[in-house]
Image 1 (tube, rainbow, N blue to C red):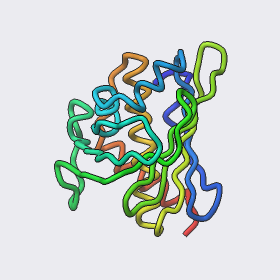
Image 2: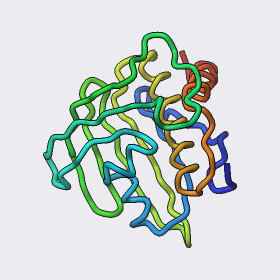
Image 3: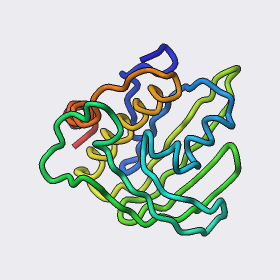
Image 4: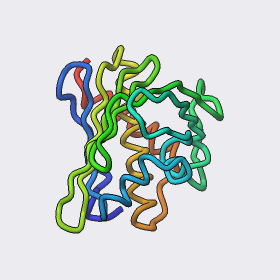
Length: 177
């Protein structure tokens, strides 16, 4: 990892069902925006899915976490090779804000703020339905953002599933029961 986004940059709860996690990435802001909105770039760190850049536009996100890193690590029991989620854009202010409603697990806002040659990415995931989902989502965002940092800094990411499993244990100890 780089000094921009150390792997120890844990997310925090800002409200009982709201996770906030940040990463400082090399800019410019348009480059980081593309990693959020372009399906081909987004599938390298999070999930594929074509988006119409319009508030209210529905789309489907497709996760294939085992394809994000080589090697992928050991996939935990209960996780398939693919996960699909119906989503909808609920706020849009290119290239600074994208907010998405995620079916069954709240909504996610991505805010981008230029900081010199870098860009601060703030991810806020609201309305997490329960602690089990909160732990999965916290470890997931942390791992996915670490993969994003690796992609934009041209470094090799750690095995996805091994990182996710370790981070889920870490978040279980960090977040209130």
